[in-house]
Image 1 (cartoon, rainbow, N blue to C red):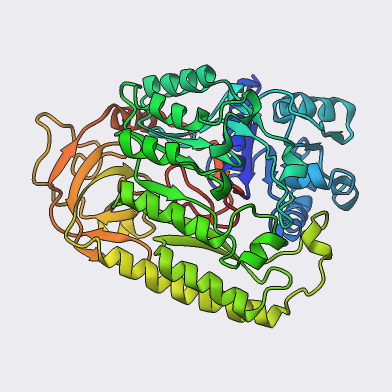
Image 2 (image 1 turned 120 degrees about the vertical axis):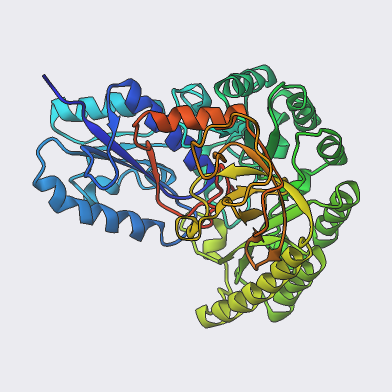
Length: 502
């Protein structure tokens, strides 16, 4: 009697890669593989790669080098490399790491099981990179990481030409799904117990460009508001140039669309934004922030910022600091500019010296940390309903706390041991009857720089179908399908190394 082969997916990069990895897990399980138990070496290791950051290449080849001697001792073990780096370096991966069995691109993730079998039978590496999308990823089988939250892709690809970004050349022009397909997927997820969905696109608010409807995204948000049982809707990442007032109105007027917004700034300098080919300027960006806050005073806004873009002067950098002070971001993903071969910015003159970039980066981080802390302290005393999450509090096991996300997506650690009100007959399946996927109401007692605390009693627990779904899943001893290579920030989680470009 044969034993099923095991697999592990290692994911690096943005939310789109996480979304794709859930599909890879689903494809492999449909083909008869099972997820490797934690701590055990898998028979098939799949790297789903990112090409946005400069260290992506080194990280991949370092990991491949680590696996080479392990594979040499395990006959039949296979290694596959997919994602953006595979799309970019198709010709070099197998020459640098000849022990790799399969290389596949961003447009043909559905081919992985066939390529693995072909490599096994033919005993030679299989490299298959398509230049255009073969099957929309969301139509493929899925092994979701969460029982209560899910990604839903509305589009893939990007029509922008930002000079620092290689994504358009790797994922192609924007392709939009039809609204009916998206809503049908969301309804199916809700039927499975999901209560929070995150709409995902490289530039999510440009959704509709392919079929000529400039208000398609705001219509989609409003349509999500009509789905019974869907409690929370988020989206990432919108582009400021295409952020329109109808989207702000839809956010404010649709109760299950959450008051949180991740909108990339990249730079506060108009001169640098022009060099980046970002088709907006500082005043437009701040105007959007003002209108969002006028419509949703409690909205939390996060962003992406690049420091040290070629030609950036101290004056340009000060303009970025000015925007950070004015916008009052609750958090920011901050990056030192990384030269990527194949992008226009890589050959620009006036590359900023590394020591200058490092100094500016630290000054930016120090300022944003202070702003985040001030904004979080302003939350003290508020009563918030949290969607209880799993695995987001690194110290929860030691402190007896649990963690959850507020409507504005702030992370809250709460006192799970003190529950003042719990539904009658609730089984003690988790900490004091509170399960991931349930909703709890708490009062914020402390704002820390990167999270909130609620150390008093839980004021209310609302048991949900999502909590039921989590309970069913944990009752079945199935290991996690997608082992993420980077720390989580949300549920589903954006990854700090490379958020979806916008």
